[in-house]
Image 1 (cartoon, rainbow, N blue to C red):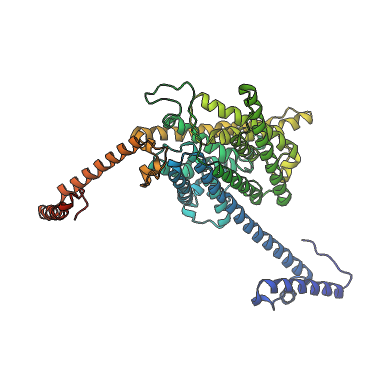
Image 2: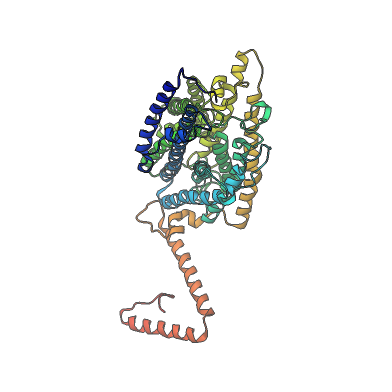
Amino acid sequence: MSTFQFPNEQEATDFASAASSVFTRTLATRTFELAELTIYDDCAAQASEFPVLQCVANALEQGQINNAQDANTWFLIFASALIFFMQAGFAMLCAGSVRIKNVGNTMLKNLLDACGAAVGFFTIGYAFAFGGQDSTTATTFIGTTNFFMVGITNQAFWLFQFAFAATSATITAGTLAERCQMAAYLCYSVILTGFVYPVVAHSIWSNNGFLSAFNVNPFLGIGVIDFAGSAVVHMTGGSTAVFATMILGPRKGRFYDARGNPLPKPKPFPGHSVALQMLGTFILWFGWYGFNPGSALILTTTLNTGPVAALAAVNTTISAAVAGTTALFTNLFVEERTTGEAKFDLLSLMNGCLGGLVAITAGCAVVEPWAAFVIGLIAGWLYLLSSAALIRIRLDDAVDAIPVHLVCGTWGILAVGFLAAPDRILAAYGKGEHAGWFYELARGSFNASLLGCQIIAIFFVIGWVFFIMFPFFIWLNYMGWFRADSLEELVGLDISYHGGGAGGNDEVKQEFLEAFNRRKDNKQNAHSNAQQQEMPQHYADVYSQQELAAREALGEDGMSVPNGMVG
């Protein structure tokens, strides 16, 4: 650092004293113990080794750096909290989208997602995704250090990445709602966040990833630009949802009758609470301001994080609003033309907004606001088309997670390849040699390096998820651990898995409930009889005598004691 030379020593001393006084007052507001300490006194003691003014300048500069790092850490924790709060949004959205007989089970699975993600990411997930990325510049397939958070010095970064992993896991919760077993769900959550998602995150976000824009030798000179996770988070979760529902099959009565014959028209299964769905949508939108602008806090290639975060927030808002209104009025137009009746569909508006949020996630910091408008416009149309296509091919998605996260996520990562502005890339990533293809054409170049990287990322994410999760779901289904049996599904998973009662719920037919209770009683009786057979003869005799005495005592009223209630 060069030293500024004052005309005379007196002016230098006066300046140093003034700077020291300001810093002393700042320290006094932060800690009383250091109130008497001054930079000038400390520097004066080292005057024989360093010029006083240079020492003061260095100390002030270091103090600013420390303050900036502390502020960054606090904001990163806050952004992590916003992202984690999205779990509540997913829970409300899923709860409102299912029938009332499955609400409790759906809520439990959403909470289980967060728990399973924390365990998986703590033990091996973070290590596979980002382990050792600061100690080597080599390109690797997976991280190999920091298991169980050993050696991690930046806990805030771990928390931030965990929140992303948990989001990816919970995307599938809604798709498999009302028919998936609990054990299968926990296994899937741990595997996705512990291994499948970390490999994707490592490849695209780690300094050592082969597709990463942060690699010292990025793929095709630029690497994949996925600023906040359209591919890493949403395509990973959406691809998992597709392969899972292909194996799991649709809900009973959705596309086929009781004999397995296709229905002429799919039977709608509307959710029990539009209010919960709306609440979930607003919570998710709110949480996205931690998702997208918060990602600017982990940039290491630029100090320009404030404007980058602000642009991400603005683009997030524009894309969501445009996608929602596009889906609403496009659906209104189609309904009016096909049925003659105009209908403002609230679900189209809500899911359209979510599709716009997913689509802008990849490029929120590298596209202009007008491009965010275009991205949201196309995302609204893609949501409607893909939602209708799922019904046509008889894939049952209870919350439309596949159109929102997979389809709109794919469009989002692809849109960056067309619309990323070079000056925005420079501000966010510190390099602007390669831009979106439309900008390259405007430069008079046919350079499609960025577009090529984005396309390869799409195939990589879908292929990797298919390679791991599709056989895993086939194995779960083969073992009989994946889908709830027919009777459990008909009476509802709340009653089947959580011991809840029908509670006047007219969705559950009485004959189904009676059949379920008979089977439950038979299982309990068989378990009780097996326990009696395993007991020593002495205890068995005592048990029989106690039961006989109880029956005789209650016999006058004609009452009986069920097996297993005595002793």
